[in-house]
Length: 564
Image (cartoon, rainbow, N blue to C red; front, side):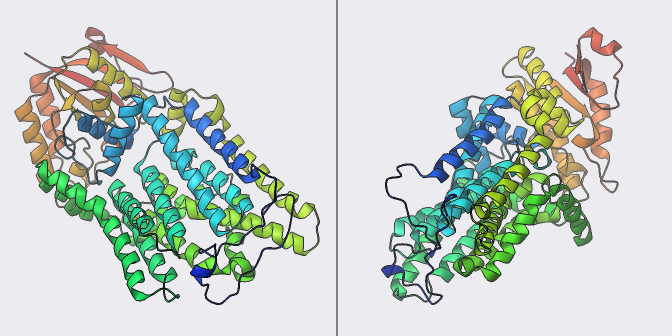
């Protein structure tokens, strides 16, 4: 609804809607348009929101890559060199995000700034899709609020949203699928159903959790088109076109990887090992993680969470929005399933849940305004809830203003990730690139794949993470033996030994063989050439200076060169 005009909605009958007789097949509450208004206020508002969020991301675009980004960037770099995923970089994630990173780097360059510029565009598109979906279902006020809140959530340090995680790509694909499906419902535009299915399939290949959004879209299609006035043949065609589209991206991925000769590795890592990894967490541990994470989610956002709860209750008493209750409840349920895979509840997983929570925030704001209008608050019925949301939004920005508006990218990384060696990885990678031949092979003993990316050197082993080797999972010993064999056969010129717990996280029940082998192998064949000692002031020592240097902290990175 308009901010300065509180005309009642045109309420459609509660009975079944004949999609052929209405221009609004989704059943969204319509607001009469004012004649002579070439530019709607809500579009101006959402563009300002996008510019605010994008401006924050752009200022911090040189933010050092973290581990997941390093994995995607290195795998994307390999793709650009013609090397398929899972040949020199093993991981349990599906390869869609690798391809997306390759595309981003092909356009913006193989740098942290180039990658984050691409993520900025992906995030801006997601914000706009949240706005469009909410506007289609509810009203302009709810749509602007939803887009603004989603944008705010996606840059929060607690969600590590400034990083280019796979969840950004999953969310974009899922939102595109849902928006296209809403446009298609009630029509015979089969191409839209197919494109919606394609986007749902892309959400899956970006990361496994995306499958839940495809399931939601498929179930919503079946429900919204049945029983209706359409004939059964048309109904089956719509489902078939959507299903074919949803299957196509994964089927094409399997075919490409099979032809590249890496299908067996792909299947082991993304299915067999992923299943083992997902079963490591117990239900009790998972619930504890979820409770802790939700407690952190409320920080500086109490008013916004109150609006989310109020938005959920509004479906009980606002007749004009009740028809969308099943859509919102379904999307909320499947979003929760998406973030619950493995019961880890990591911060960036919640990016997939915030589209629907942002919609509920918008519904809460719109419903508060409608309630006050019924109580005859006059102009204040629109202004008071909007002002409360603006103040809450400003407070959330102010709480993290040091990172958003004042920190350098390096400082923002330290404030967000603490002692993790992401800034040091940049310096180590640069040194390797400048002090080794382009065909030199490198082995990083630790979970810092971003070093490979910065160095522009091929890995001597596909184990770009050491986490799987020291987990209490059935494949651990086999993985250790394979990594040792790969490194010993390649004899890498450079070995980077990451002496940090966060880069290993050794389970007490894991086989310690890889640690013992590392110490012995490095001592026998390599000479210390450099040390990176991070903290408030990063220190690098190379050559003879590295041998004499004593680290200030117990966590640092060692660089070794093979003796000739």
